[in-house]
Length: 76
Image 1 (cartoon, rainbow, N blue to C red):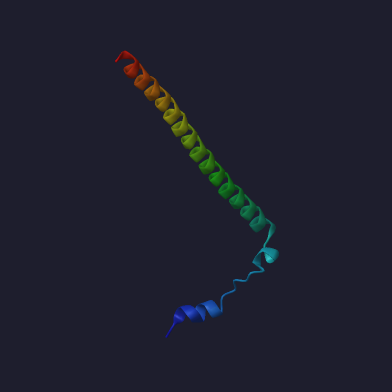
Image 2 (tube, helix red, strand yellow):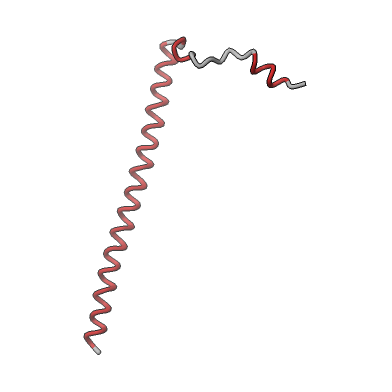
């Protein structure tokens, strides 16, 4: 016998739950949404910072490498 399907058929969960929620539930939902948004913004900024640093390191390394190659070619 499938107890889980029987329980889900009698569940009080509804898609209209936000409309029936209390003020405290709405405040909690807004705080949770802000927290999730803040987390993803921080994640995005951290990723953008890492990419910018890698780009800066790569750019300066390439320029230095090119200048070393021209020095070696000029000396020969």
